[in-house]
Amino acid sequence: MDRVVVVGAGFAGLSTVRHLQRQPVEVTIVDQHNFHTFQPLLYQVATAGLDPADVAYPVRTIFGREPNVAFRHGRAVSVDLGARQLALADGGQLDYDHLVVATGATTGYFAVPGAQDHAMALYTLADARHLRNAVLGCLEAADARPQDFDNGAPSFVVVGGGATGVEIAGALVELLDVAVRRDRLRIDRQRSRVIILEAGDRLLPGFAAEASRYALETLRSRQVDVRLHSTVAEVTGDGVRLDGESLRAAAVVWAAGVTVDGTLAATLPTAHGRGGRVTLQPDLSIVGHPEVFVVGDAGAVPWGPARPEACPQVAQVAIQSGKHAARQIMAQLAGQTTTLFAYHDKGLMATIGRHAAVAQLRRGPILRGTLGWLAWLGLHLVYLVGFRNRVVVLINWFWRYLDWPSGPRLIVADVEADL
Image 1 (cartoon, rainbow, N blue to C red):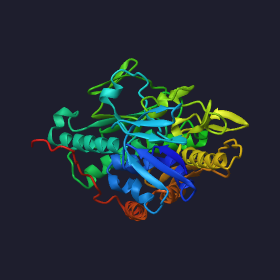
Image 2: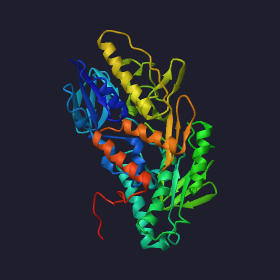
Image 3: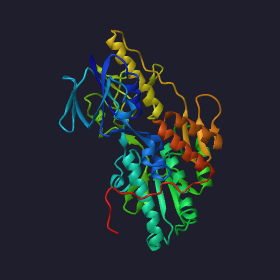
Image 4: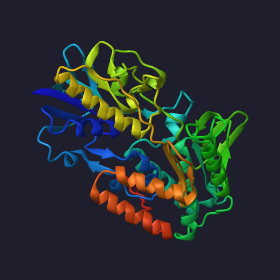
């Protein structure tokens, strides 16, 4: 029986495995974490809207009833394409007949001085926990030592005006509100600021202009200081430096983009494009190795025969490319030729906070406000893994629809500090 190794348990990896389960192949999924993370909701973990367990689900549980699927907990470090062998950080090795690289991407700092050392990313579950601890810790510190935070007015800077930046900025404003209203933290809410910096000329650059305008107007109506055409020159220990101006910040959130550098995909001896993404054949395999596929954020996935440019790095591309790779593997095993990948654009969504979101569907009008927010909620519940997670998140969101409850605003460090 042919051996298929899938590296990565994100959207692309899970999609690949789901379309190979119960097929006449032995599938091994490899990941350095033993859980799948629902990345679109990480910002809610970071801003104390959800618990980490609400957006994560064990990989072994997902495929526990599939006899042809196994899980290997480990970090893949290199691939010997000639020997068809995957090497792991713990010294282990896995032989394969077909390999699917779905390692995603990592935070891209674009060589901005100080960004990697002083800014906080939001790409993994560990990032979300770290950011939540930092933000809540800053609020507590501002209550205890207001003189260290502009007389009790802490500010937060978000770098990047894409979907992640817009969502985290909107959620931070709501967190500041609830910190005063519910937790009675002694901070000056009128002078406390959330600042979002975008180098381009509009927010949500991948969306239609109408959606960008709505996001801008909504954030500004909620007292978010949106600054377009603002390029960060340096991130320091106490804020960011722009060209000619310095902004003091209790915390800097980096949501400016991602890169494949530092992942297994970056080590593949083949051509790479912008952001380190692997250059792919039209069927998503790599040049010279039809048995190796790269899917999701790791690859420059083409839209299709009529549009050779790369798809955006979003969940739908990951899901569809993973499914396509699985089908090409089965076609090869059946002695058939592979087919070209064609992306079916289902639209884009971004939430700006309670009762405010934009849903840009492939056809029809752009949904905004509460209607867009409800559409956003429904779609994310559909794709969230695990019945328990869906129920918990649905209850949480329903309760928040009525009023923000006394949610999981807990500072939980891995190592307890001396009090």
